[in-house]
Structures are given as C-alpha cells and as structure tokens.
Length: 176
Length: 179
Image 1 (cartoon, rainbow over the protein chains, first blue to last red):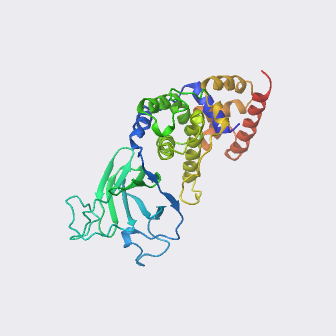
Image 2: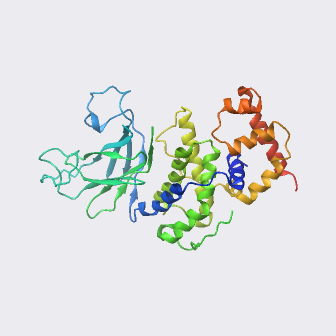
Image 3: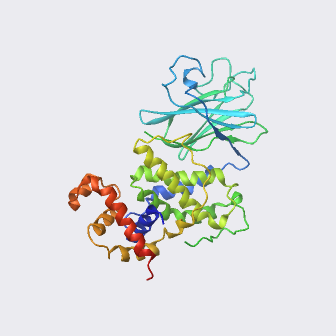
C-alpha cells in the first residue's frame, strides 16, 4: 500500500482540492495529439552535448556546457532535440538525420533553421508539438530545425515525410 | 476502482474515439490529480504530471494490451511522472533521458478512490498525536514546508520525516486490521 496512494485517497475523500478545470481540459485535448499510423522513436543514450545551436557537433563549446541533446531513433531515422527555456518561452532546436538532402529551392515557410538558398522542397517537415500549440517547419537541406516562442511544459517533435509514417519523439518535459 | 469503461474491452486502445477518451478523463482525472498532489507538487507541477500521463498514453495507445486496467495504468503512470518531477525539484539527478520505462499497471492504484478514502479517514482519526495532526496536514496541505509543519505541531523539523513514516506505518497497520 503506497503512501502516495493512501494520501491521494484521503485527499479525494476530503474533496478539498479538486482537479482544476484547465487540467481536465488539457487531458481532453490530448486526444487530438494522437498520431494515427505514427511511429514513436526510441530514446538513445548519447555522450555529451552536441547542440544543433552550436553547429551540430562543432567543437566550439566545452563538453560540459550547453543544453543537453536528446536523441531518438527508429530504423533509418534519428531525431536529435535540444530544448531550452529563454525568457519564459520554450526554444527547440535539433536535427533530423539522414537529412532529405534535396537540392531544390526553399519554400516560403522554411522557418528560422533554413539557410538562404537551400531548403528542401521535398516535403520533409518537422512539427514541434506542445499541449497547447504546435509549429511546423520545412526541414532545411541539412536537416536542422529551430523553433521558438513555444509554451513550456511538454514537447514532442514529429518528422513528416511524404509517403512515410510520421516519426515522433517521446514527449519531453521542459520547464525551469 | 471500477475499471470497465464505456470503451469495450475488445476494442483496442488504438481506435479509441473521443467520447471514450473523455470518459476516461472524467473517470480517472480526479484520481490522477490527487496522486500528483500527494507528492507535494504545486499546481503547475501536478498539472504537468497528470498531463504527462495522458501524453504517455497518447504515445502508447497501440502498446497498452490490457484496456480493462487502463485506470490503474493511468494512475501508475501519473505516480511515475510525479515522482520524477518531485525528484527533479529536489535537485536529484534523474538518470537517462528522464523518460520512464514502460509502465505496468499497479494493482495497488485501486485504493485511490474517495470511498476508500473515507474509510481511511475513519482509521486516521483514531490515531493519537502527533500522528493524527501530522497526517491531516500531509493530506490537506501537501505543499506545507517542514518549517511550517514544525511550528504548527510544535515538533522539530528534523523529526518530521521519520515521524511521518512511523505514522503512515501505523495507519497502514490499522487498515490491515479487520473492520
């Protein structure tokens, strides 16, 4: 008999602290975050930070600095994600590899990660999802992405590729 | 805990419709919240723990093989998320990716129920002091600091943890006695 379960039962009987309405609303809304036919990538341990913000592994930051990168992988696709909170908002950067690597012009919504004159045009996109807001970006040719202005809390990155099932990271908790 | 929901057992979780999902929220949301708050989490962290459990369900819909025990799974997963958040707030290093392993529904989660809670209150009120007051505070004021509890109950802050553990043990003993 776990103490927390006993305390929780006592709390429910006391009726003094019901779940706030927004908690229930978020729980109901989570239904729409399902990814039918999607594949959830598995967390993979990596050694040391290797931030997309620092150039995807360029040795310009010491090993013990910078945000931690979390890696998720499925057969044939790896998603690296680093998430930080700045001024109370969530910033997410990362890299999908292998990148689509197409040599076509950038689309109009290539997002902040796209480098001028590159971009994909192959339809590869990343969707950064939170419980309340999602943002989608075309993936740049090198597979990097960066999105800011998101609410803190839970976040997941989804890679969309034409003709392939979407691949998502597991949900990560990021709050200061 | 009544486990059978409007979602039929033979229907896999992967094809849950919105009504069935909302039924789960209505049925188990309060239990999940109570568990998260029982860890002493503030409202923001408790809300994150509960939402984390729902999002784990989102990412595991096809992997949950026992829909009859989905309530226990949700409560157990909330406990895992709350524990992880609680440890993080205490500055403890959380290993790996911070991501819990696959959660198996804990049958003990069935006691998270208001009816059972009323039964526990009856037993709690038979405890002597300081157990009765200390456990009442633990239940009703989960965010109270040890300093606040110490002043209120006139005991030393250093003795609160061990005393509470002893009191919980006594309460569990009372609950195991025949009614």
